[in-house]
Image (tube, rainbow, N blue to C red; front, side, top):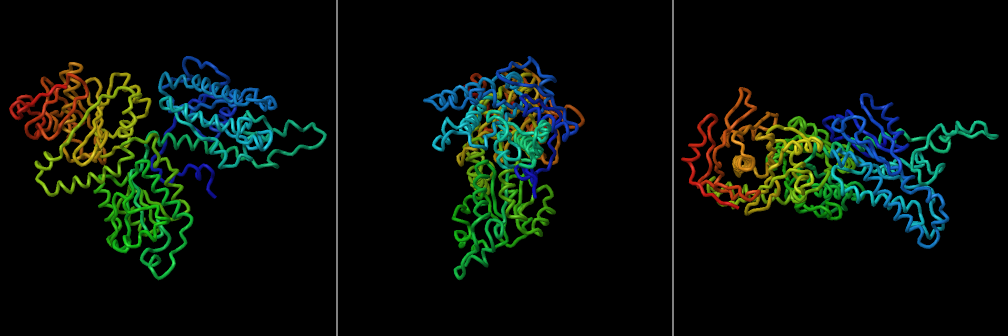
Length: 639
């Protein structure tokens, strides 16, 4: 049997470890129990614990420097939010007393949360806030009052709903659903409301019966009423935090799930079991659940595709019979390779078509031979599908398929890819120059210098998810980004639109102190020659903004970023050391950008210089400025 933490928080798609060195816990007795558990079961983890009750004011600084923590956990004590007023339950049954009491509890929640988040507000420390466990015993007077403010369980549920809402007003704060964890494990095995007050909302201890040894009758251990699942509860809480951390850091993130069809999306073989002459296989159960899961993946911005050994004409003709309840259409999938070619080859085609690498893909297939063959051909792909009763749970609950925030670009990813394929079909029929000129491509830049900027979350997503066009491969934590901004750094984000589609925010350049720290760009716009002009435009903007006359850029080779290693050289930078990792460039006048691009400045007063023809790369070491002056007929437009 799967342990609770493995069931709730699967690791089937995990490739990399989740390093956690130090964390801060702020809370009451429940957090103290968690500290005790971590001390016994997580060797090498340093945990600082700060007791927090009522509307306490935290010390000016935590026990260790805030920057040394990977995150903090805030556990608000329910007993100080509900107060002792919830004990005098009879008084809450009169008139509107219960409604007034609940409003007061909500205000206490808001005040306590704001106090407990002091280090988050001051230092943007990543924070996980636990919610409250709902009582399992009847906490109302009269059946008619169930689910009303005269029901303590209702009050706690309302506090949880309000906590979810109010947390969204803070940056870098997320809720850990310990109520859901407790419900899944079974509250009878851990929640103390059979013995303690409803408002306490903590875990019972196995040794409580030790205090009853002097009684007339022997009192057995509590475990004779219910075995303790205390450790499973705390293991699951920690797994929930690790999973949330992986999601926020975008560790091993999945961008594409490729499905086999027979005995994977439906029971049986479509050619054998879904004809006109026999009833189809039983459809209930996992096929329906997996169909729904496909749509949840799409809602998270994950692409879905098909790779099946079948006759495409048969699949298309019988799709509506095989796909359970018609919840799925072939149009829901961005790519479908349905033929008799080796699946490893077909998956290679899908990856190439979508400009993705195998490390960001998952292949779901019931056949172990096919899974092994695909894994052998694409070692970094993840393969699952042996047990149909596991697949849906893994795809929905694994942190690698979750996102911290859904952006507009995520929601529209599949549609944009369809338009991208239209663009590529047009490319094949035109000369390169005619194709570029006919795109009607517009690039709009914006400068982002704070995590509160509405564009930040998409920038952060792109920064930590992009592998191929990523000049350094660096992944950033929210705290590191805060430090970057505090030191004067900025993101230059750009949006791209052409006649086919609006691609959204697809590129980010990180600049600090006249240094190009990193450049990431979605491969969706690779091939329309934006990247060199983006570097030049940002260089112009920074030079005119701050007066710098010399710039530096860095490139760190990874195993997949070959496509972007020469981007700075193409923009006119020259190598500055023998390693090829550092580039430099003097600036004396605005640099030209490609003529097929309409570039919108991000701020008033910054010129856009459009070349009359496509910019040619300046060879490293050449005298850049005179060549640019002679090569381009320039038009200067001021915003």
